[in-house]
Length: 316
Image (cartoon, rainbow, N blue to C red; front, side, top):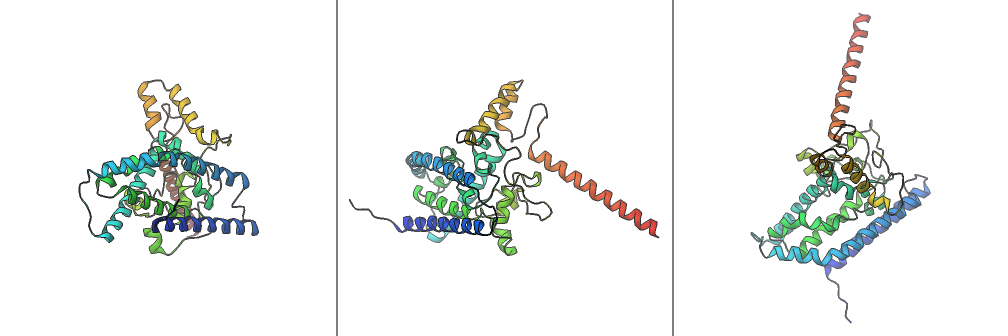
């Protein structure tokens, strides 16, 4: 039996190997310098969630390929120039990932699946492996436009793998802010630290995988601020972090909220509105909390300014 590997197979394998080596190096220096970036339980949970996602991914791989390949038959146009083809594919795929990711934060049903990726109170390269377990079941539907745009199924999947590897590399605290031009265009570790924060200011921000431009253009960008130190994890951490509850805890909470909703429309709103929405106002969505934070800061700033003016007047 002959086993042959294409150049793309070798490239992807080498890049994944590179990520694993970097992870081991970061882990080593974390323990050597007592930085506490890793804990055994958290790291094993990350590996467990990645394994679950890989199993579902493998189960969906054939269906994903054939659905993309089927839609490719109905492509609206075909880009002939190979350089333009790959540039447009990567840009379009990255934008569609931004949209997929944004839906995962603003629609509670999808948040119930995506929440696993945010449930760690640590942030390191293995956090990138803490997968959205059920994403392979629906991700392909967000990438169908690429097939209609004339990109082959194999190329779409390859582009996704490459951008996913980049997305894994920004899960680190070891790299500070990079050069301003790079920070303006690309997703950086600083941007992604914000994305994983549970601070009110940082909720639902910086959704991009490779380019941060989508967030800048569509209003989901937030810079990492030294005066607002990042706290990782969820606004409310699950008490049970066992292998079953870590995947299903938000579905359980969603089911309870739907059950207590007084009307059918309220039940639908619990499912499709952003996380935090409640029919009685007992909990709030991130945008409302961020508006309240902004108003509070503006009020404090005005009060401090008035106090300074009063002191100056008294001194005169």
